[in-house]
Length: 383
Ligand SMILES: C=C1C[C@]23C[C@H]1CC[C@H]2[C@]1(C)CCC[C@@](C)(C(=O)O)[C@H]1[C@@H]3C(=O)O
Ligand SMILES: O=C(O)CCC(=O)C(=O)O
Ligand SMILES: [Fe+2]
Figure: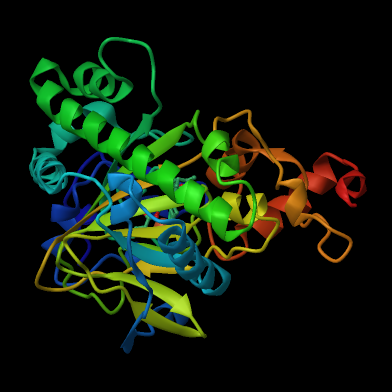
């Protein structure tokens, strides 16, 4: 029996006749005996993981203490290279982020999602925006809804005394959310710092100048997303996050101990075992383009379960919107011509927000659509 029979005004009829489940807390759906059909994924998405991903766990200690020998750095770069040529996922430990800060961020996320729906909706995520609170992304899609609530906000460094994240929390939720904003501001800064170190390692691993990608990402326009996955009465039918590749450049994720992140490798779903001391790193489509297709951005998803709610914090490192995505000359040759056209993160983001639901082929389909709407001479970059 569907809950909408009992609730008055909150459904909006989509033109297709499908009802958009907007403005509900996931709580409402958890209490039903069956999950609404909008949350049911097709059979091929319901295949379960039977093994763990054997991604490398890489010790970044030396990069932060500053006494890393060249040999150690090269060893790290080699491990990263092997992972990125294969599936683009690895974990890092001794990443320099204070474990207390990570714990505080988790605890604030937990408190935020426990707030009454009316409060969370004060900064409701609107279609086309990347910031705000969303329940099941119902503002964007009308079926195959993810079993999650999210809170997203932008991050870039500014010259204001208070940072952009604190401003977001205070203006959207009020002065009493200042503390939460401060913790997330610090968390984002820490993530960017890790991201820039990883950019150095990626540069080394691709044999380009160590500072190349680090400089490219010095000015960023990143997105932070807090994912809250409630328990689900039908976990085999639903998904917390549907299979996708991240469109941004690099994702830095901290998951709690429940587990649920899975990666599609060698035609199989493989789970990523949570480690409280580790950050999960993965290559996004924009870095695939920046490496001229050499490094893979891999399909992944998050599953849900009956017993435990789950939290993950995803920091999506992205370049400034107007930055043109061009791989370094070193990665272009007669044998390795340009794989993607010149485009900006703005172009690509716009495509994923307005025209295309992120999946394994986002970058390819963006390229086709971009080239057909805007003929450009990609041959000019061939050497
Ligand atoms: C460019 C973006 C699209 C998404 C938010 C940012 C970074 C990652 C993307 C996303 C998380 C990939 C999975 C699907 C998605 C819809 C989600 O489930 O959250 C994606 C984001 C989005 O479009 O909101
Ligand atoms: O929650 C997770 O473990 C994965 C989330 C994810 O892939 C994303 O937000 O892009
Ligand atoms: Fe993702």
